[in-house]
Length: 178
Image (cartoon, rainbow, N blue to C red; front, side, top):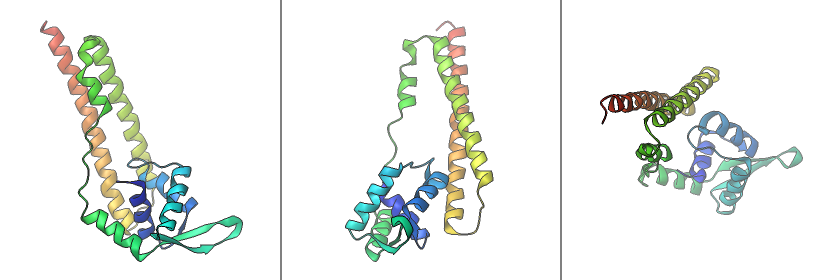
């Protein structure tokens, strides 16, 4: 996924939105999947407008611009959604470290895994808090956003459980004197 497609997707769901509106939507809906800074978002809006994928639909006070998707932007979004194969996430900094934990000794390895599990507990709690604060409607963003949120919750819980299991495996390996 790219920032470009995230912006096009949000504009497909929202009839008109300013850069500020889109930034807020990123913060409450996409931040756990595809975070973006204000400068990244506004830069992408400029590129998309220049390429004819979006257009300024209205201008307000203090230079506020509301954007909407063009036919070309909708075609690009649909092409990306249905025809471009997703790229699997293959790099995982944490698992790379796990692979080499034998270099630090069993106690440090278990501590590392325990710390990672606690961090996932914190992130999962944040996600559950966010889920409780969202007003869930029946629109596309709510229906499909809940699917993505549920994936995030299950993934974090699975990974947290794996860290706990891995720490016990190291403990068992150490106890066996291997």
